[in-house]
Image 1 (cartoon, rainbow, N blue to C red):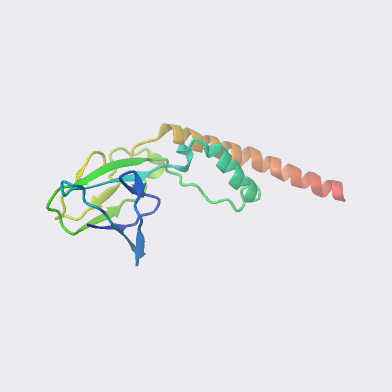
Image 2: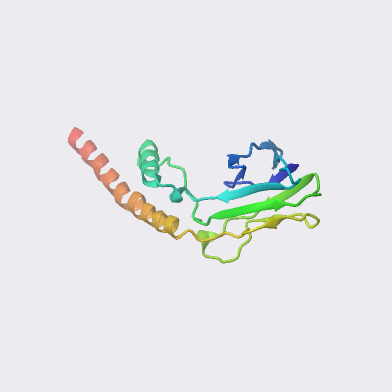
Length: 168
């Protein structure tokens, strides 16, 4: 079975616990999914915030230092919403499944926002296809914004000013 995903962004796809290899064809990501012994196709759609990782602080600090006090550091998504959708396509399915991924809700505060949609003629069984709030990641994101955005930049400016002042 072919899986066509539009607007993939930072969603991840897994089948049997392994990442699904996707190829980009224009604005669509395409993958081949295997059927199980019952003729069904099962896979998982995940979306996790960078701040849900156990080593989030180490990675943020590393990229902040490498990015010269955050000037060249990549911007993290404002949304900390997560998605864990286990999808089952029943036996006798079509040859191609089309998924259209939705935009992330602002900071994960909206309830019941669908993470993806399927074509109108397609039939899938999914346990949870909505964005869910990740409170731990939201607190970590706030902490990151305060510490790295304010305190460390001020200390960086003071350090640079001290280095320039001492060299004169």
